[in-house]
Image (cartoon, rainbow, N blue to C red; front, side, top):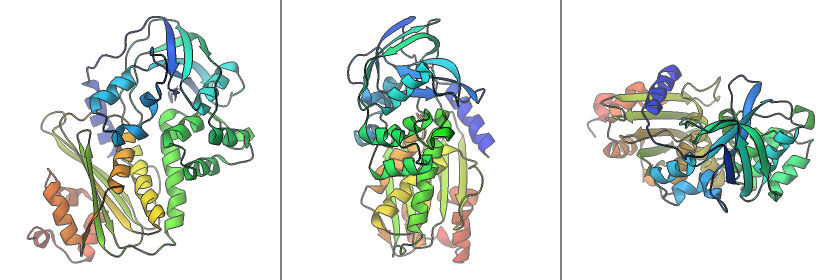
Length: 389
């Protein structure tokens, strides 16, 4: 199924014709701060900064945590991202002790935007849209790159200097101290965390899922000891041409993610899904990084409330939707979980409410699902009886 989703999203992104910023071979501007580590040819990868020709405070261009909560439009976000120019050089992921990588680490640990200067081997060209990471503008090889003196974030600095602290422990400690996820992920990706001898760079899209799954796994261990919620709950949120419904059930932890793409390219109605039972997830999700980021966002709220529940998420993406990276899922689910929820006495009435807000008939989600279908069957609820609500 991931092959189908990946092929669909590749086709979708190939249709996007939005121009990125036009710059020459020399660029004098700032980095928000922002870095990007590619995955092609791993373990020798393209790594480098992302720089905008705008001077001053450009932090909003690479702080997705504030985009949804501040009602930034899809056009706003794409505008931020396509103004970021990606410079790159090849570097082995284990070779951290060289001046270029040290500059990338300085950037990832910074507490503010950094004045930067770059010279490229050719005029930067192109743009990148991807389901896993946020878009960025044109790319070129670097010939020269300089940054001003950097002031580090105190919490990230502590993790950097603690070379006896495992990377997973560092990620969780930073999360507990409310360091923004995007800051943790960037610092993790350039090898600033972990036991000294084990540190290495991690490609950006891998590091996003690594941080999501690390936090999610730790939170799941915690919530397993809590009492279950007492009623059926529905949380909702809509933004950026998406609708999300989160159904929490008074059961031990189980999880299912279902996403429908409706008429985004034409007349297609596609559903992709994955799930886990109480024993947890085995192997990489067939729907990619959105599985781990949505799971983590739900577990954050359960841990905060000190409750346990089963969770089923339904997402619909509509015409006009553009892949912006898994932050889109994470921050929308976080926003949903921060809204007042609706309570229902049973799963049937909760699903009937969700159905009233969906574009696609709920029956199609149920037929695609694994967990939701199983739960309905365990309650001896047939589809026919369900749709007589």
